[in-house]
Length: 90
Image (tube, rainbow, N blue to C red):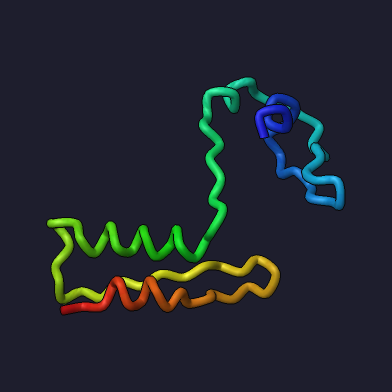
């Protein structure tokens, strides 16, 4: 990502070999200051986030909290059952 952003700020293209820069520039070296953390298990990450929100003292217990993953291939939201369970209103 750092390399792509240094050349162009336009959207990169994803192909069989990974991301490639298709922009004409200009880029920015500022991407080197971003900590590009990745998520290895999206469903677990969403459930943990919902649990963290559910347990926050400023979130009323009576408000249900849901967690979904957006499927970029289909354009659909995929419900994460563990997140729904964790975010259930009480």
